[in-house]
Amino acid sequence: MRLEILDIENAMGGVLIHNLADAQGHKAFAKGHRLGESDVEKLRALGKTNVLVGMFEEGDVNENDAATRIANAVCGENISLSAVSGGRVNLFATTRGILKVDDDALNRINSLDGITIATIPANQVVAPKKMVATIKTIGLAIREETLREVENVRRETSNVIGVRELRAARVAVILTGSEQARERVEKTFTPAIVSRVEELGASVVSNEYVAHDERAIANAIARAKNLNVDCVILAGETSIMDARDVTPSGIAQAGGQIEVYGAPVEPGNLLLLAYANDLPIVGAPGCVKSRDTNVVDLILPRLLAGERVRKKDIVALANGGLLL
Image (cartoon, rainbow, N blue to C red; front, top):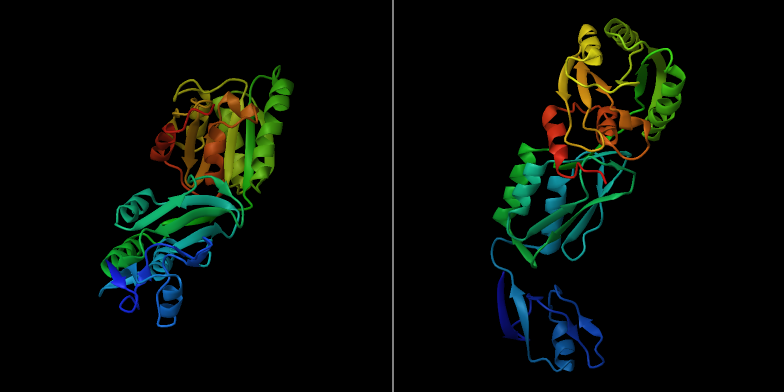
């Protein structure tokens, strides 16, 4: 777009760069208004003989058309779009789920001239109609080649911004400890774990208490597998203190493999995450007995939405992992 100060007769077809006010200070013309023949007399009545306008050049796309194309390119699953206005489109969740954002794709698009996309933090639970992102073009026109770059990103990454729906997941809870501690452990851990699960639309279908013993833990996991659960949560009288501790050894006996032990999150450094094939097994630290936000709250929604959380995902929690 070429900016010029032109006399009003020659400015037709251009778009106003700034608002124009009448004698009372009220807005007579809004910036971005594309001038037509009918505007000449109105401008003359405002005492204008020339105006600053943007003149479209070949390859320019106006802000609203450009914003719409960008929105369509970044819009993933379970996302709806607002109407476009002033080069802005807002994105909303259409279902309850986990906001997923492809950081690399988002950074590539935001590095292009004239495009800004802002999101709320990824991997949090969002409700239907929750605004999750906003797109705003900078300037009144975007180059066609820039928009094609955005659309190339879309071809490489079909879900730049999306919402992964929370399932009605089935969860097995296994508490471990001595017989003497059973009443205390069940009383302190069960309500907090169950409420976490149910708040995410899932249900606890099995809640066992077993001895803090490798074989007992392995057998409890096997029983949970037979119930076709989507996630197992292990917690108990004592936290896991080593990757070769009793609980990890029991998980291994049940066919599980440790994905990560230890998380850069406080509360929750002693988190263990394992998988038995596709079944996630969470070795929860002692802080899970509190309803204050801790590491379990950061990963459980993602697991219940069916995401395979990897070690790199746990490592990435470090930035913001101090949950004061």
